[in-house]
Length: 202
Ligand SMILES: C[S@@+](CC[C@H](N)C(=O)[O-])C[C@H]1O[C@@H](n2cnc3c(N)ncnc32)[C@H](O)[C@@H]1O
Image (cartoon, rainbow, N blue to C red; front, side, top):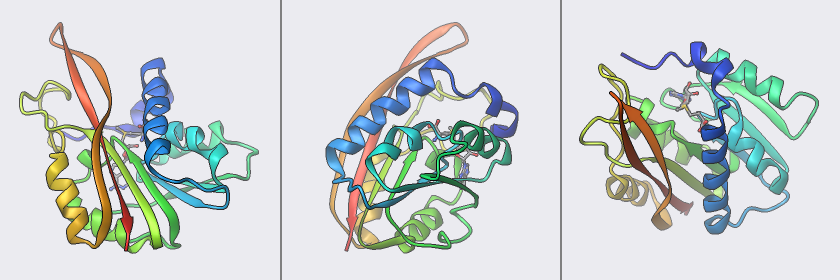
């Protein structure tokens, strides 16, 4: 069972999701040397929560997602601001149509079945010297983050992800815990750590 993001789009911008995006943007800004003239892409950018946190620090943010419903909300959230654009695109299928200076992502990679393809296409979407910043759920061996029946990745092994970036030619690869989130499942509250893995292309 995959998550139906079209159905969840209207209610996505909760306090918890907004707060998570704020904390991840702080963590990204502490590692990635964001520049005012940069073009950035947010992969699996959903309703644009992370994009809108980072937008004021760069020239342009492309919110990339496979869910038309999430992108519709993203367009409403960024209406009238030429700093933002949306693109319906599957990063596992192909690189972005235009290269960007930085590629960020929050909680999307574990929803992409072929993460290796997505990472290859991420690398190919970056300008030489561009940066990648991937925030996602740490390995969730107990399967307490998603509903029963979820068939995506139960979190991501941050060290394996860092190694995969090095194999693709990224340098200055780092990993850290960016934030934690608390989620209830079957009446029990579970704390989950969210990592940030970063690297520089070339
Ligand atoms: C858990 S949501 C995170 C949304 C947003 N980044 C946030 O933190 O609020 C995951 C998002 O990834 C998108 N997604 C899933 N597979 C994708 C793919 N192959 N390419 C691009 N986006 C994808 C989903 O449609 C969804 O909007």
